[in-house]
Image (tube, rainbow, N blue to C red):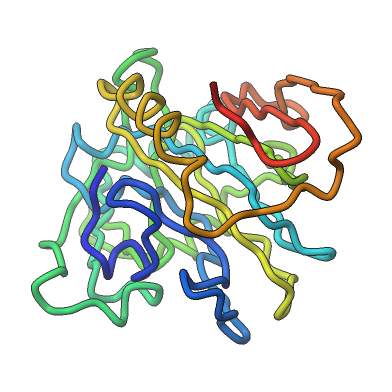
Length: 261
């Protein structure tokens, strides 16, 4: 997906790859950078069905402390909720006001997209399995009786740690996830240590195009990154699953920067 500069943190590597972290393209480190410290879904700014996207994060520079990403399996969490709680969400809507999202406060007016409303109760477009979609920290949920509640307050009532997976990056990790099923957030804690990941996003039908684009562009950055583990050749592929969850998080871990052939 090609986002406007402001919605890509004004820090794009290429038109389709965004730099995530605190390092600008000129090498400057943004001081005390704190972004995305809340559960969210990146596709929530787009009307359904365009909100169904896949996300890829490739770790280029990993800080010595912090810098992790948390994932919350909303499908598994939803299956564990009581009938009373599920009834509470019947016909509920969540409204996304992009102008109110802290991370996009620097956007130009022309880059601000219209407000978006999503059903909280969703049927996954591929698996056809029901789940809750509580996608925006700055959003508000409107219930069928007309009452409203902020998304953080709603999440506080249903959050269950056992459906959370927190990924500790190693240089070269590639993490891919389904953005409807998995809400995610930064875990912060890296202070002013350098942290850089490359993010690609693709609407569900264009995943193969995204992978092809990453293969052609990810290794061609004007900034060169040196592996800290050049002597190591071990490669491991594993699935990262939260306890009790049915997650779709896959990460590829290898020593040194990721090389996509």
